Image (cartoon, rainbow, N blue to C red; front, top):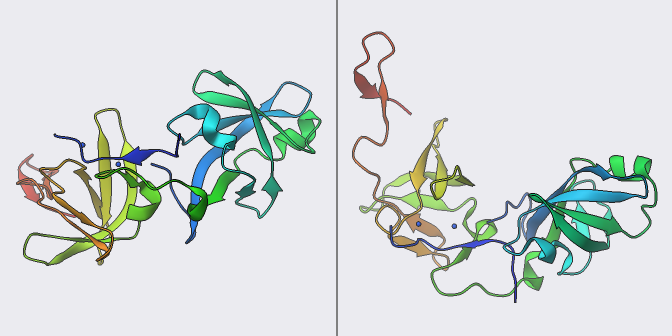
Length: 198
C-alpha cells in the first residue's frame, strides 16, 4: 500500500507536515491547470498518484474535497476535484494544503516514521537533557534534516541519520540525538572565527 512519505533513519538517513493533531498533509494545491477546473497539486506522498487515495481530503480552510488524480506532470499531479468545473474555482484553491486523518494511513514499517508522528516531539541528548523540539523535517537534497526549535528561541538542523538520531521512541514521545561536534558553532562575522550561537 502506498502511503504518504515515511522516513527511515537510513544507515548514514524521515514525510508530510501536519498542522493539527490527528491529520497529515498529503499535498498542496499549486494552482489551476487549464480552463476546465483541473488543478496542479504538489504531492507529499511516496507515490504522487496516491495523493487522492485516502478518501476525501480536508483543506486548510475547512473544505472537504474528493480528488481524482489524472496524471503526473513534472513534480505535480494534475487533479480533477468534484464540483470544481472552471478555472476561477480552481484558482480559488491555490495554496490550500490537503489533509487526511492520520487514522486512515497504514502503519509504517519498522524504522520508518511519518513526519506527522515526529513533529513536536522533544529532542533529548544522550544524557536526557532537552535540546528542543522537532519543528520541521526538510530534504534539501542530501537527505532528511530535522529542524530542532530551541525553547529559548532559534533553531538548528540535524541530519536524520542513525549516527545523529540513534533513538526514536514514539511511545515515550521523544527523540534521542547525538549532535555532531560544532553543531551550534557559527562563524564570527567580524573575524571569521567560530563562536557559539543558536
